[in-house]
Amino acid sequence: MLPLRTRVNRIKDGAILILVCLICIFSASSAFSQTNLPNPIRLGIRTAAFPIGHVLVPEDYDVATNRIIKPGEYDGFCNLLKQKLESYLNLKGIHPNITVVPVNIENQYRGKGYPRFDGLVTNKIDIECGPNSLSSLKLLDTKGKPIEDKVDYAPVSFYRTGIKLLLKEDEAKKLDNQNEIELENRLRALKIGVIQRTTTLQQFESDKGRRFYPNYIPFDAKDERGDARDSALDALELPASDQNSIQAFASDAVILRTLLKEGVEDNLPYRKYRKPYELRGYTLFPRKPGDYLFGETENYIIAIQRKPGGYSADKLKKLITDVLKQKKWVVNAQKEIENYEFGTISLFERWKGFLPYLLYSCIAAVIVFFIVVFIKRKKEKNKDMVSPQPPSSSSGQSNYKFGSVQNLQINERGSSGTQNNNNLQPEIWETLNDFKQIVADLQQKYPRASEQQATTIIDAEFEEIRHNQPQRGQNLLSLKRLWNGVKKGSLKVGEHFAEETPWGKAAIGFLEGVTDDIT
Image (tube, rainbow, N blue to C red):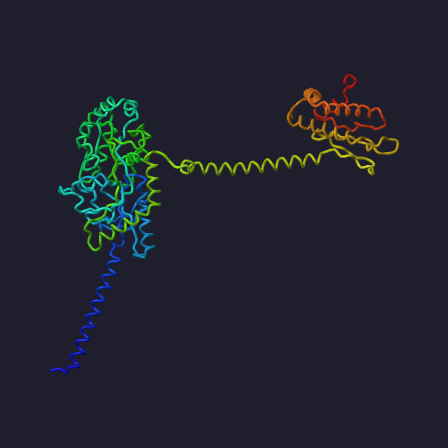
């Protein structure tokens, strides 16, 4: 038998070992509970509604290995949700290394090969974001069981909308301005296409739907992997004379607005590319924003797996719920979606398209401004260079150029026995400068005028000045009298005139003209 001390020591060692194991187990379970989220979190994005989610760059997907080689790039509410989830994980320190990877949803209006929420059910994604109403979880899967048995949702919705019709403008005009009874009759007669296995079809199959819209036609995919919506839209585009045609297509308003404004993108092989329907004369009905066929709206939710393997669905659900409870960004995002659905845009969005043109206009205005200033200053500089200046008395001879009247010169001699030009009053020089500018401006305006035409133009300009500016006209008369006076004096004025140009001859003729009849 072992000594008592030895037995006591072994009991102590065993107790310590058990305690350490319990601590390790507790710590591990605690750590697991804190980080029990998928990594990466695969966020499936439905691209049926443009402001909720649309593709910028398609993903690179390897079908053989069922693996995403390079994630795609998306925009809209779902992409914003992706960013907010990652920020929240980092901010709260839940698990900063977890990333959120966007994945394109293939189960959009497709046949039994890709039923609704198939990505969640088959564990291809962890979250599905898109125009999914809460009531869509009550739809039946391919085995006839409710989808909600396998798919859960975050209890905070992110948008509400209702059902409208996509139809030709001519058809919509027949529904406008009708009284209630006539409108009901016209809607009853309307052939409306609706997609199978949708909440929209559930509305039409209800008692109210059958009573008001009895001519609805359900459409399914043409094959297991086809697109059911393509079948309905093909029928919508058929001529009215075709017995397989429909007059309207029913769906959620924000989805129909996407068809109207964007058409159908061409980056998916199983879906037919379509131009925006507004370019082909289509519109939405009811026309008024916020009015819907059944007068009801449904909530859009974020769907998640109900029983995932390897992580806690409750923790993922709580994560999404916490992020959606951040009111500021959600409210702003809801407003953006609503503006798109209603066909309205914010003031910034309204002017955003004109900003480049506004910028170019401002730049052009600045350039024109500097050109005008440059030309104006150059003209002023040239004017200063050719302005007449009284000749220097120290010079025996000085020459004066008469503006742009080419080579018209006055040679004024300051020798003894002659009248020095310095005795001329300053006002005469100002008037002479004024006359020079008048002739220069007229020559620039009528550069090809003959001598006779130039003379007539100068005379007409003089008469207009006399009539409208009497003092200026009187100054020009004084200049004419002085000019004719100095010719009779000792000052030899005009003997060096160069009379090669019509305007030079006309200017001299004007100054030498008879003034006796001018009073």
